[in-house]
Length: 466
Image (cartoon, rainbow, N blue to C red; front, top):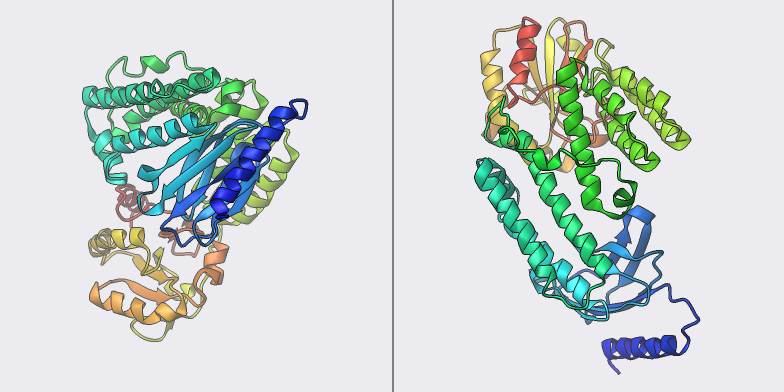
């Protein structure tokens, strides 16, 4: 008997047994199917909210079958390689999936007792995808629209998802209610984010949406513990709204953003939501934030989660050496493209603007034209522009070739141990490009300075009278 047929016969047999023994509680899902055109050998099924995770093996012929012992019904995620999609699972479900990885989202098809809910989720994903046709460029295009057209498009998208629900007849009423609510939350999330995102893409620095544009969010409750637990769409929206109203409060009360968030946080009654918001705020305890020490103290005073406080303290101990005014970590004897080696101490007496980059890094290369322009503008000033490549040693020749072909200026250096270079480790660099500004005495001005493409960089230089 073929593996897939064998799996289905087992499923049917188990289902029959379950019907005969109703007293026994079923706490699992039977998940099987076939994956076409894949080099992957596993499917990952998981849910972040309760740490559920299951790895299912894919046989050589593409078939798979396994039992998922889930804690509770609701939304889950499955991945095959880098692709992902949503699942809705409930105890006792028997779900079969067929998918062709060459047309991942478009080919998803479910059969079995949970087919309608999951086929709706697959269709819903395609509807959402159409709104952002073209990926990041599609997202940009959507938010570049003026108010009326933007609102029309996202309203039509919400309606299309709600209309799709009506096509499926075997849906749990609770599932329908949850999905309809999630569609609303996603609409409101895009509405909430429009003013800042439109301002960014349309390059309108002081853009403000028309009066009444956000009225639909006026009574939105960011402290709904039940929805926060069940809905990822609600979690994203409540976090976004919390950030927006904190920005508004900071401006209105002339206080720091960190303080505004802490004051708004004090109004949150749900412990889970409050703790989640604090974890998000903890990302700002970083060298990028000149008020990191103050924020650290406020979070420590507000939290009663000892594990969180311990992790935050460990993080703060690592980054507090990188605050403005402290002596900078150094690099020694890095290979200089023009010959010999260069150390940070060789540049003492001048400001030093450091670009940590690599030849394979797209965003790094996108900054090159802007960096060359800034270098030219400040060529005769008291500042050195240093680019440190963290390419691995096998890419050494590629580095030299790119420096030559792109006519890169400034001081071009090659780090001694790529990501493991002590300078990179000391600055806690985990993503590039990263820009650092050091003063003539070797002290930190900014451990995470503005990029060359950011107009704020020139503002910083002007403030320093460079």
